[in-house]
Amino acid sequence: MSLNSEQVRAEVLAILKRLAPEVDPAQIVPDQVLRTQVDLDSMDWLNVLASIHEQLGVNIPELDYGKVVTLDAMVAYLSDKLAASPE
Image 1 (cartoon, rainbow, N blue to C red):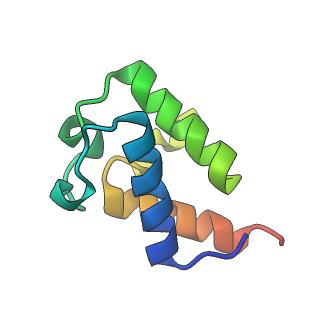
Image 2 (image 1 turned 180 degrees about the vertical axis):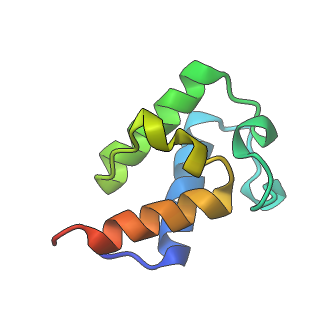
């Protein structure tokens, strides 16, 4: 799957909105800890990561959880993984 950073960002925000309808994507500060901004507990966060895997085909292993704590970091991580994966 080939998506640019803005498309990846839109996908992540759509997933967050679907799993937490009260979230206003316009209020998310891209370089702040995402999970606390959208008030997700650990199970909700795992659902976000599972939905990302389902939507985008990118598995985020537990070792990499620290690399996806902000929206910007998550978009960069996913963009790199999508660019590196064979079509």
